[in-house]
Length: 220
Ligand code: CA
Image 1 (tube, rainbow, N blue to C red):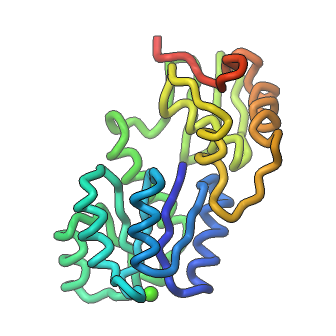
Image 2 (image 1 turned 90 degrees about the vertical axis):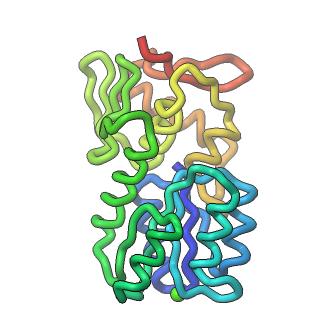
């Protein structure tokens, strides 16, 4: 799951970036409004975390322009401004949720899961294609009675596949979902993760389409 983090405070940004990576998100972090808008135009994100006080273009302007792109993209405002006017303003401009600093990272993660649930098909918290189940809250996966706790990266990879059952994802597709901009990716990293997941859940959990990529079966 790819997240765009828009935050100009270096310390706050670094802390959120690390926490999100630990929680299996691929994070791209930008520190001003203009860079945020360019990033959102170029890449596809599943959720945006937006600070309001930003250089060059402030958070309201960013939100206005994100909404003008017309894409369905969940935005959570994460800011120190706790005045009621700012909250109302942000929500009216099309933010999906609002979190005031300081906050506990657990709450941010729960709110992200909630907006992603609302975005996704139905309100099911657990992703499933009928055979494979994946719980974003606990990172537990099960396949034909085999239940296992996944690492952050294993989770991110399986989540990407289970979000599009029946669709073949290439190595590049998967790398984009598992790794952020500044992360180094070993050439065999994706194969390594697939191997680890199969070892935990069984070889049939993920199908290999030779020379093209990987997929999980469509819901049956
Ligand atoms: Ca700021």
